[in-house]
Image (cartoon, rainbow, N blue to C red):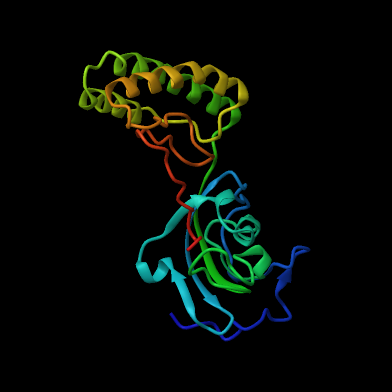
Length: 231
């Protein structure tokens, strides 16, 4: 996808914020609702470095990207929050709001980045009350799974029991200290049961994960996968 003519620098009529983010509306959207940082957004986007090289594009892939707005680079979190559904906007994001002038992440583009972003959909994050209710349901399933798994005589049975927890919709925010305290005895019980079946199994990871992610019900610690467009 060819770079825009103004890829090298933001034009004089671009809107600039205190952080250094610059943007220009390319197509007006509809309505007044804007995404909060906890919401999940669906977008189409293309990104270039200021010398005109494209480094990423959901448009080229033909598939929109969805991610929680608080799990992307700072320039996206701030910029997309300015948009309404249907809007298309061009952003000039300085390095300190992107991956940095000397990115620590291998392969990440350096310096100021330019993105064309079209906001397709906003999925509102659950309220605190909804998340509390979701945790209650999930925790009840976790306790039941723990007790069932600990009755197993072999690893296959144990793993099958653990998969049942995946059928329950998890909380979308990190657990509170009180919730962690509730889960801890069952985590320890599950660990002991796993070790009895095979000492090298490792620690089961079965607690609510970070905001916007589902619990990883595996027998080894999960790794975090950065949300798009962190590429």
